[in-house]
Image (cartoon, rainbow, N blue to C red):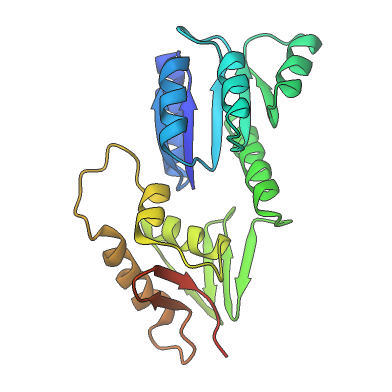
Length: 224
């Protein structure tokens, strides 16, 4: 899942990026409202963490602008102010959630998971397909009775596939959700990671779950 952090406190920004990447999220970061709008217009983010008090363009104006443009990505507002009216104003402008600094990182993770569940209409962070179980909160994967160990990026690709099971995803769409703007690797990176996943998820099992749709991309599905 790909997130954007727009926070002008560089120390907090960098800590959030590091810790969220440690939770298998792909993260872009910026430090002002104008840059945030540029990022949001270029990429379909799964969730946005938006500080209210930012230079150039404050978080409320960014939120109003993106909602006015029809961008529906869930937004969590961060602020140092704890007034009820501030929270009401943020929610009325189209925010999905609101946190006051300082906050506990575990609570931020929980709120992000809730926003992601809302957008996927899925009631939990546990996904199943045939005998494959992916627990996104515990970062645990089971295929039948076998537990499977994945790298951080392998897990991110599988999570994106299973959250969109049955939907054909292009290589470009997978890459855009899993790798941020700092990535400078090869153009076949998605194919490489799909091969890794097939070896771990499908190899040795009669039913194959990862399928190539020629000319379109990849899909996770359980064919009869």
